[in-house]
Image (cartoon, rainbow, N blue to C red; front, side, top):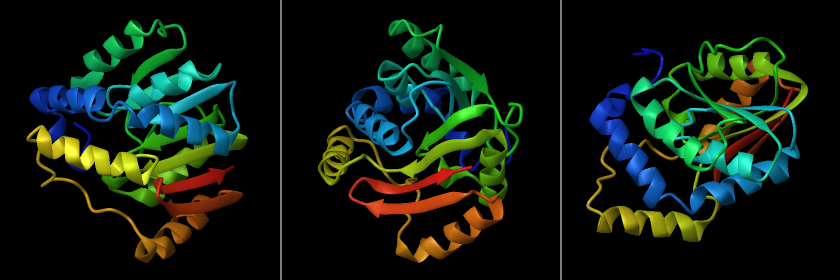
Length: 214
């Protein structure tokens, strides 16, 4: 297990299975919408994309279906690997989406590799965010784009997910706190440390996201 990632115990075999089930069912409408927003913001449709904290690879699959990107779907938990591979194979995307074990604080990629890096929902669990964003900068090509953060893509979907979680008997007791305006200064300083050429914090009905460019 990777000590640099928070709450890794939730990704033991049983936790990983439950997480994948929730992603496939309750969160299913989120991934195409968020992927579309990422594509619109980054405007990158070819090259290599790295999906950090991919989980069951739902976002990576959605991105692949609407682009020509070759995607490395990276997660620190080997317990979720089987579910991720099942999702990738079921869509016939195994030639363009590859599951990779890795931690955001020390990613198994060469410098200047990716045209795009994304993440939905994993940033809250990055123990050392300055180090993590520095790694994102390292693996991006000059001019490469990134879009990371969390959210359902719209207020309506967010509300619907909350209601579905309650109906399904799933508890949010371990849900990480949401970021807001009070967190903007911290992330601005973190992004300055990472030395991105451009960055913007998006804090609206789509969620809390950071758009950046190397």
